[in-house]
Length: 186
Image 1: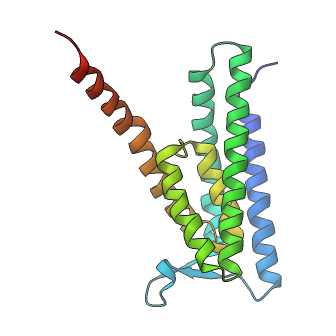
Image 2: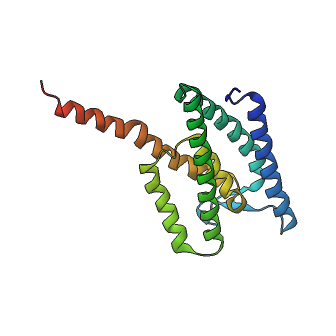
């Protein structure tokens, strides 16, 4: 069996994401109408309607599914390796989904201390774990969509993912090369 994300699998992922967002918007419509969110929760900042999620989330899912496929192709050498890569993708996506749900849950219930710990903990995790990966961003955004809509979590997730990518793809390898260069015996 091929473990490639065929266009059909990508379409299924996008269909799932569209269903996810339609369920979210239907729930909002039945409970006080479709919400809008202000940047930084400040009324003087522009408000973004949750309707934008119907456009943003499918595009994000399609793009990130392509990124996941490239990672599978690049990292896998054999069938066992592909299984390991796929397992890490599933674990990363589910862990990020749960993290986004927890962050949203504690924010919604007014637990500002736990929300702050989770948010700043996410920044620390970005330094330790490769949360710049596509499955992590998608899981995080989907986990926070019901509370914050799609746009704000996508912006926050993109910033944190960029920080994580900078650390894991450039700073750590650069420090490693610097270490090797400095300990070299001529």
